[in-house]
Length: 483
Image 1: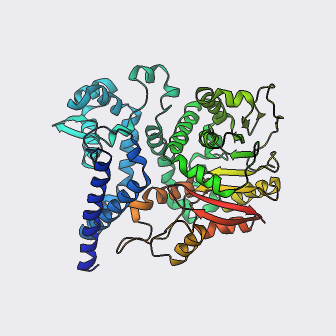
Image 2: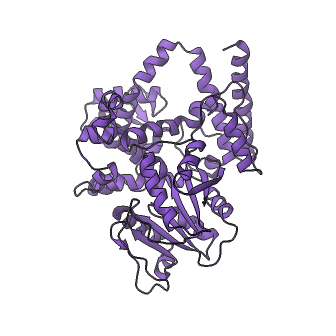
Image 3: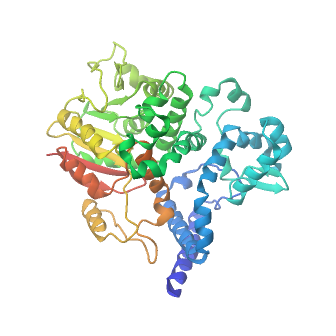
């Protein structure tokens, strides 16, 4: 990399930092301090501010990768498993929750030890390891407090509530649930990484190889006695939903069909609690919605709708369909029940829906399984039906002029720009750090993958769907029509 590239990276950091400060100032706020607890606000999820953050992180990480010794870089990345393990551990023994009760003054490791039963020497080293990486703050020797990053590891319950009901300890705490989940079964299964990659014929996934089970991760987690795992997964999924802008769902559904009529049906396939349908119902109250998922998510969905819009379910405007046990709707519904036993991999019972949509589903499955899922939806679809698949748009790290051209054609009202020099084509960890990590996870634990535009298009071609357009975003929308 030339000196001009280094200057360009520094310039991106400088100009975008100024832009970030200006954006917060216009809103009458300041850029949050790393030492203050995380306080969600609309600014945290503003797409324009998010783009600014991505450029800053992309340039800063590329600058570090350029100037830091490659010996140090490889050493640090090789030890990545310690980050996963220590994060999972502090969540498991409720350290962030203890520190919340202690406040900004923090808590000495001896006191944390007394509350958790963990040796103080271990705790001090674990917390210092994380504080070195800007997770937790060491306010004085061996005294630690939460900071902006570690506050995301908090559970939503008090320590006493966690003790009284450990099965529900991750409810409404998606970040803590996600960290704990990755530090458990996936981290254990990583020991099979070299063996599995060299010979994938050993098992369906690395997860299956490690735990010697024919069950999928979802089936395994739904076994009797594993209820807390199912609750943990539900918490992660609900938190994932909350990260996305309502406008992303509404605009994609609106653009997919210009002729939605009263009582047209939208089917949320694998919709978890149906939170996306709640968003859509607010925008399109005249439509009918069906949320389909497995028994445990639908159980959570009943509670979710009872709390947020009970009338929608009571009237039948929204239906909650269990893949295993059929529709669970009251008989007073003015709409006919569509009860049937089915899953992704059996025929879709709801025929001729206006829109079938999948949200973060496709990446969980291999190409062969995705073809079955999309194939069943195509068999159920009418000539005017649309399929909207929400998911990650995987991008190459090099410049991809063909992708940019395709996206420009897909969205004539959107200016799609390539990454500024000398940033990676996908903005590196600033843009796709998380999605490339998830690609590894889905590949090895679910046999799934994050896909490029071409790969989404090919899946459609092989199952009777034509990819009409792609709406980029934090969660891209891939809009298909029937062939």
